[in-house]
Image (cartoon, rainbow, N blue to C red; front, top):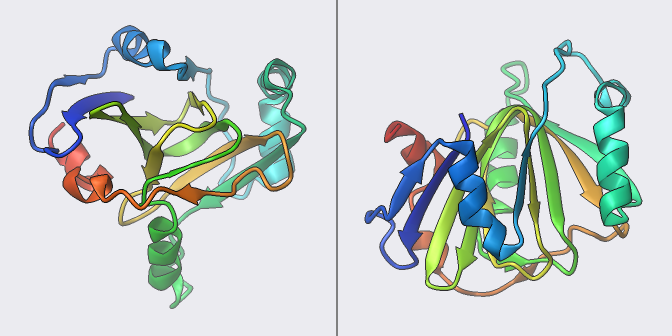
Length: 191
């Protein structure tokens, strides 16, 4: 289930709001220009490639591309690979890349095809942790301070939308706020 937990920026143990009510989550995010949509999911085989994923969601992908002038769309998939002895190190490196607060010069738009991840939005003096799961599309406006956690055992597939080829260029803020907030795994334990 999609989850929103709001906390003061320097006290991640103090929960100001925790809800799985999708309408309430939208109400909390909308004033900040953040869009959360729910799409019907399409069953796909574990071997489905990027073209298969994009074809399964073609009408929604085209709608979002037109609405946001997104010219580039791709698919990213991270799934555990017990056959690869380097998988734990690869997963850790992938996770750490996104754990520091940053901004982008364009919107960050992701649709979760499978699995989950958590967007942490630093809005004013609060952090909004939004756990997105299969069927969730999250659009975070350009310039929004945020970070992302995929958990210690990443497992997700997401469609990403970009306006420019260099769309995922992070401007790291240097703020240590992320160190005061529970990571995804801890948020899920509280469920």
